[in-house]
Length: 531
Image (cartoon, rainbow, N blue to C red; front, side, top):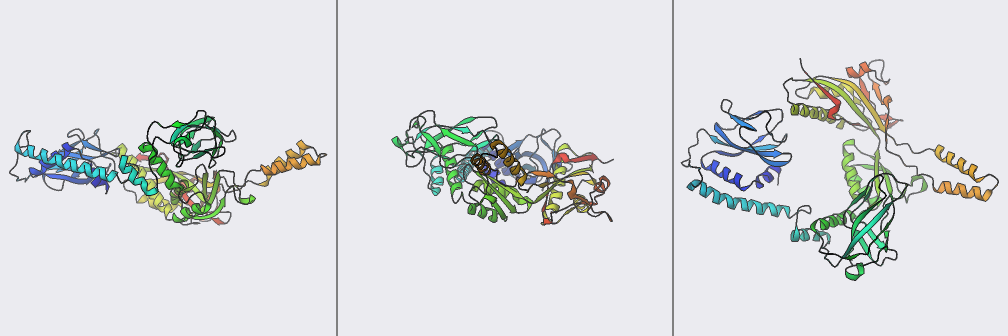
């Protein structure tokens, strides 16, 4: 079902009756127009004598526009004209117009309340509206996010998940922060919790986030499959273990005993549990991460995880992957890895990227509206992104090609770069200096005369040594902004060369090919009115 069809199925009864009446008197119903924020007037396909109504999308919600407030009909242009200050459709969406034709020859003309024509139209419209709603509900019943009640039970049954009844005990688990980790910590839905000897197993029913500076947080839990009835009732303090570690969580407990639930599992709880079951299929292994990265057309180069040899070992609860992929693929790869990783594991992707942010100015028509200027900025970014997306690994971004791409943007003239910010991914692994300094401190503290104490101190330092994992941070690197002017190739670009476009963003670091990635926002663009 496409967006236009979905829009038509959502029409209320009143709009359906209006469409029927318009058609009965020989008018045109639901003529589509593609709205562009830069255009005010839209000619109609046939000669018209008036517009009856317009519907469309505003803030992604369907909307009926008000005549003479949001729009008007121009007889001279035979066009629908959007009014200044009125509500307009979302940019690049379809609006639907009902209008009366000048040559309408229908014998039916009485549309007043109580007339035979209107009464029949209202009766037929009611049946159509009912059928539309039935189709809409049947459509929604097929998706886990929108199905309800019995329909949801049937959808999640595909995963082998069934709704838990009130026989499954529920309660609250309290998670405590590890003081060594200061950031936000996400406790996933579906995290398994057990008693010390495993007599009962529980699952969190909702996700929770332990905010920075927050020491603990409560999360609702419910007995897992196989622990219905009395098996799920445990005393206060009995829950003490997590089936999978969560980075940053030191311990877990229940301050109150669990009890049989007051009712069956809600639709939302069932949805979350089914999604957790789906995410758990084939996960929690490096092979699974490798697979989803390759399926997304990326190439994993190196892995750091807690089970690797010391040279490739990361902190518990973390996995770092160095990969080769186009910059535009990284968001989808990161999302796929996030959905595939084990619950509570922090997965980080790093790649050889050179990021650049151009700051530029350009001229546009003085009568361009505010929304029109915003759209032009988006078109400028899209044009530059289109050029950068066509670059391969090791190919620099050339200033003259960036200017050529800007020349293809309608309504823009005299583009000029004012500055270019450049940074690269930090792939350096922590060197031996920090470890050497820590060892020296341990030697001084233990005393050279006590060999046993010295050995124990050095062993403790080596056991707690931080893993050598790339951080993936952004490092500003102006040296990668290089001149392409004759006789100055490869040297740092000057302000004059940046304005002239005689520069490049180098795509080679330490002799290795890197990818160039554009990072730009509308605030980086200054639009000036043409004189």
